[in-house]
Image 1 (spheres, helix red, strand yellow):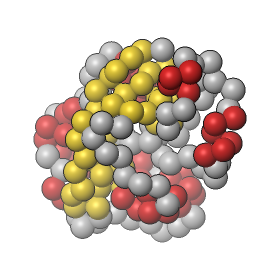
Image 2: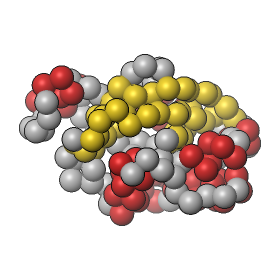
Image 3: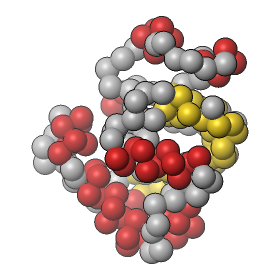
Image 4: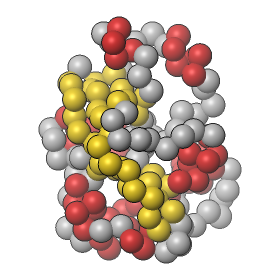
Length: 161
């Protein structure tokens, strides 16, 4: 699953964050996968072991935060549940597709053990329909549909920190 955009912190707040990272990486935007906790820890572990090379986010997340969509060639600093930097990734591909058009290759490459698109969708719907996500959106009745736009991103691990 994809990273949720930073809560309500500003870029200046992030720049002041006390992170122990080489200066060349410290200015990178942060990549947060899911919310802090067991899911984020599993996703970060999959990035670090190379099984996770794709991720998904709803386009509305970027619209809500006023953030631009990732672009190929951009690098991000992956943080764990303790907000500690663990890796640098580079976006290699970004596609915007309706939820119903997510393909098997993308689902498998998310590194969560999915072997079918149906499994991928069920897992992601649990996340997007969960109390944490709905609370973050401020919409307790939020649901995705086949037409909901998904940002399907591919990336590569550049460096483990």
